Image 1 (tube, protein in one colour):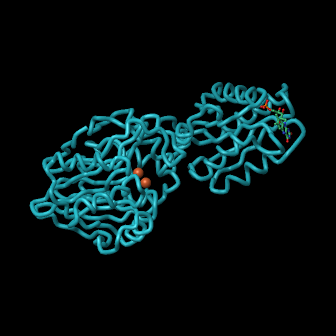
Image 2 (cartoon, rainbow, N blue to C red):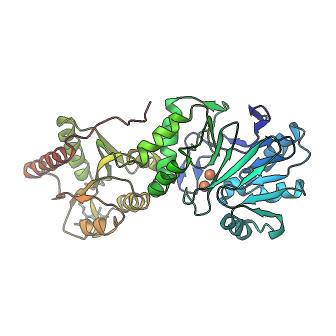
Image 3 (cartoon, helix red, strand yellow):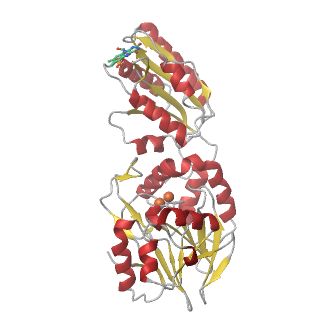
Length: 399
Ligand SMILES: Cc1cc2nc3c(=O)[nH]c(=O)nc-3n(C[C@H](O)[C@H](O)[C@H](O)COP(=O)(O)O)c2cc1C
Ligand SMILES: [Fe+2]
Ligand SMILES: [Fe+2]
């Protein structure tokens, strides 16, 4: 790949990671990812926004060489996480005059994480501007998207918002710009679910902060650049809103088929009531898809057998993850089969403290579900249908 021109004098000089399949040792990356880094040439100063994951240091340096960049005056660190900051040390060695421009919290983190010396920093305040001659950038602090030190950089005149992880997607593509591509929508929604969803209320505030800006382009640090910012802005407004969809998500596991039979019955009962439903078999599920389904679903039903007096470990993993991701679901319950007894229900309830959801009547069945158990699942479907009355089905910001 070569450096890609975004606007006259503004280049994307980062790296596309086509092969990466796991992020944070947790998040599956079915479509790879990219680490975007942006070079802005002003009439007097040259500025780089963010760097790349350390294995791609060579790519970044080659791109800068290919553009004949001899001097970099400023390197903006919007975020201290290593996928964007990890190459700072290499870059500072190559460009000895360059200063790292960031906020005090990010500076402290970069000193801790990357051992960057104090005298290489230029600390800026919220809403501070920096002139490059004929171009000016402004820094907007945006804590908790998704670390405490995160900030955005806005380029006046050209109207480009360099948003770092915010609005990003794990999506490797050679195409720099996206307009209203449904594939990018799904990738960005998945990214939001995995990384941003726990910080929904902070993001809501940041959307207010950037609302008055004239934004013509949003350039995130992962995935393609938005040439029609309204596309991703309206999607984010929708995802962070309190609106939930008429949809039920059922993560499930079943060792000998009894819980699976209950899931099939509940799915049928929901379909009969015209309630969209997404069962996820936890032995095969990509957890990113499960997270994405939770962004705007109204109800969660955890389906698990009792194993060693407890929820099956795969169900417990899903419960733990759901609790960390804090989706805005309104109703939750548990169904499952057991042999002699245990604390399955209690343990699931206790492990979802972050959910602000009403707990519906669970259905716990001894052995394989019988007629009365199927009737109980029908009643659960009725209870869900009653709660969902009036909810819409399609995302307002979707393609
Ligand atoms: C490894 C293992 C451990 C189990 N531990 C318990 C238990 O502690 N308490 C209980 O009520 N049932 C226990 N059971 C029985 C299952 O919960 C029961 O067979 C249930 O019907 C399985 O549902 P499934 O067909 O959906 O896997 C255990 C079963 C297995 C295979
Ligand atoms: Fe990050
Ligand atoms: Fe990132």
